[in-house]
Length: 547
Image (cartoon, rainbow, N blue to C red):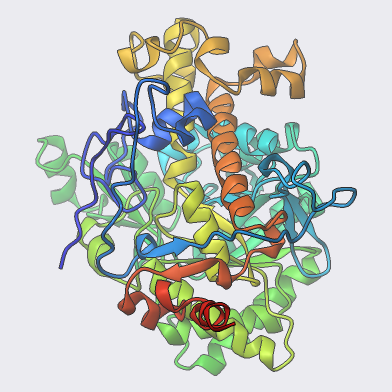
């Protein structure tokens, strides 16, 4: 059975422009979009979107009465009618203190050095795709102001024409520098800037360059894969000269721009673009033991360079690779392991590959918990984990953290935290036409979906004055509207997560557990190990009735 996710939500006034994914996002999210999916709207009106629209003139009821198949949608969140756990110091278990704004959703990850965050999310890897570069200021400044980790993805140096290499190693990397420096400008101790390494990045000496210039300000990340595709990263370029440049840099470019017949076809318009591909890792290894040996050598080398925080990103491979990632990351004492299930994606992936390959997120995440618990039961200090793959809302954050508890510390979100960057840049480009080209704004005028909210940034974005309070009256003029939109979206996610946690009587996100979930059908129970709704606490219920 193929599940079709609804494209409209009349209760909150959200509408998908295209086909809807489980995340609530459109399957194809465009930077120029004029609205109005839930995430798009949340980038402006924030926590107001937690509630049905037109308050005072409506009544509303849930439409979500049927749960088919196995997905995050087929997990439901528990609520309790008594108790309170995890209250912050100084608060009592009185009704006056047990209110949702008092729920702590901040935390930390890492082995020996703890990295703090103010909200338990992080970005996906925003690498060499041009859309990541275009809107980086909004993404990075937003992440820095809110206080969550952001990842510089693979190949940023390799595709940079201004980057300089000597004997195959980087000596100058202006785009990578820009990305790191942009985040660090507003960094206040919460969040992190993570730089990813693939085969080409390793060859180019990215790790050596970053540690020499930035030291322990940066987390370095080894990459095994991602959930959107089973091959290396890709971009498309429409310039023959750029394609030849990438080929010279050592990349796989398809079709081959050095062939005369390909150049002739491009000249006449039969070929209009070239795809640049990265290489697969570990192709020269034939066993798990050899992969482990090579992996441990890589980690040791990074530590010798001076890296104090190291993470690993793995994709939606099968169970063997999942077990390898958890076991090896644990033994290597890594700070974070991001497990990316099929269903997500941020950049350019072959469409049918993205639709058909790999392990869907909920299956992968459920097994990740099972394997992590096996190690923990043996007394091992299991690596902190982040779950990724088609997650966008506050209920997704709760469910993913609970499904993997106590090992899962963060939820990795790709497109959902990019959308506010697009929205804010488009609005700023209209209100300040002189900035439009620099911001990559796509609108000539405000659409009705925005103009109905206001005419200026301070009345369009619910989070404007919160950001202003944080940075000051003068500095707010330098903050891109895309970053303000990121803040506004995160405020909605944070408030929604606080409400869900308070309903579960958990006043610190660290208290979240698998007991805060139940399965809405038996198939989901079987695959996740989360009990079926009417089985949860049924024994206790019958004791009450018999007492």
